[in-house]
View (cartoon, rainbow, N blue to C red):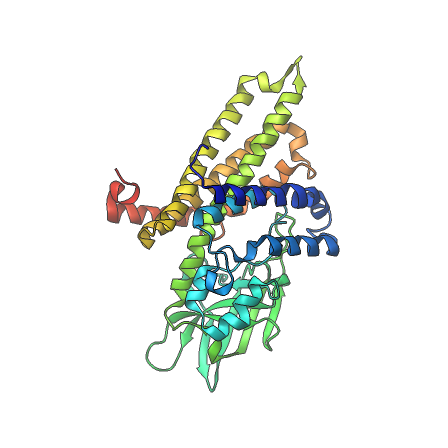
Length: 393
């Protein structure tokens, strides 16, 4: 192996690869030309297979029936899931370890375990029109009242809300006891009175999971639905961001690997002026640059996961997750651009996975913290710790 992987890691890698290649990829074009939707029976089969594989519980603690896989093995799984377009790998919820640390036993029973068992679906209502990466400008308020909080505000880009029955909502808390202005997360059932979908914009990709805008108008949320204490909301959100940035990097590596294989195969078959274009040095240069950058991104991503498995300082892991999210997302975009170019006009057809990746990978440089935000996080870390403090001697 080019990177040392345990037998367990290789087994998970193979299982995830088979699920993607045999079950998901064959339905990419069906989704692309049907607004992201699959036939109900196909979607249900994918959900059931994901449950049987254990994908929703790979990060959950053993005590709750989870698999508690090492982070490196989780990265290997999501790398393979990144090889499919049209978000077909989003056929299940996935619970995270931080949820069991943050939530009360009652919350775990009501929300987290049903997610893990495929009985409930979640979405994250965090971003606002003027509050994306800068949460200090968040306008959504949770005002404590008799027996409840009343949440008011507007949330943008609530990914997969059309498939969810509840949301993790981040709000600034007004407790009326001198500790106002701190952030908290809440479980909010989406059928609650006072929740209105005000927009459901179309995006550049063709996913069945939408990204609507929701308005919350004095939505009554039970006191027991607050997750943790006021002031802990950002801590939990950072845990989610840290994990998701790592998994975005993993998915980008999977996408790039498939793209390079596609480009290589096509270049060997496409004949121009009497010879395969794979014999032309400019094509070879694009493939060589793509493979080299993928190798660098994969090593960085695997090592960031291994750092977490070794229990290294969480602030340092946070920096490395930003580094891999930045590098892998930009790498994958460059690879997609090159492979579309290798295909030529064929690469601009929606029936070509290269064209779909070209559209879909663009958002990975934006969500869960833009490339610019990742650079700020990395810069602050090196200014505080120095080069050796961040990446060693």
